[in-house]
Image (cartoon, rainbow, N blue to C red):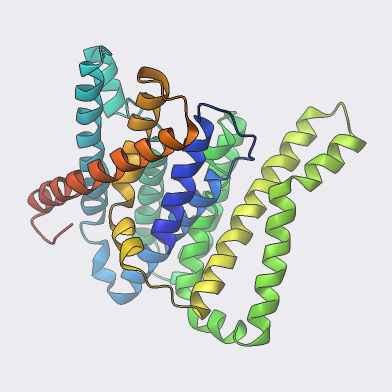
Length: 318
């Protein structure tokens, strides 16, 4: 559920932003990003718990699986946009490949994920004890969030980051968490998390802050970012607890989860294409056109990416 759920949240968040007829909806893409960061942290910790040797060649495996599809996407973006008369200079292409300027729309997540891989690998190579690893990882993630704030980076760069160590924590202590959240306690946790999520998503604290401190924009920004962070954490907790109690099976959504990375990479191509280059003036037609093109492209290129990654690693299917 985490993969396809996160994919749908991010995809439709971006679609809504570019609809021909504007719809005033509060941004919700950060919720999907939180699910992906949680899934990443949880999955990595599970692999390490199963076999410590997983850390051997870790960076090569993770970077190849992350970067090869990005290179393919960059090439496809360049070709399709060239067809419509949009050209990039060699300098722009090289800078994009380094992540400092991206031809692939909305791809900031990829390079932030790369940073998380580097942090995870470094801490887990230096520390042997899992509890110390988790503490160090949490502290470093908080520091990264602080640096993002100091550098005045957009909030979406860091509000979902804490979901990564949260995934690691849930993996490490999942048996204890299951015991605590069984029965009525699980319902209580879900209810409380839902209340926190709804209140934070609605921006209630920010609204109160605006009424009391009308001229303090700095404080308002801090409250808004805090609400988004709490919203992401509580939303992730809700999904974790619901999934621990209800088994959601669907062949369609399973397949969607398998191409989630490609959907993320190619959503921007067709959103921009149908909103700026080929102007579709109907919201429904725009949404359906983008969805069909993204899914078909993702299915085709997922297979290509799998072959390329397998060839580069020569160790397992994608």
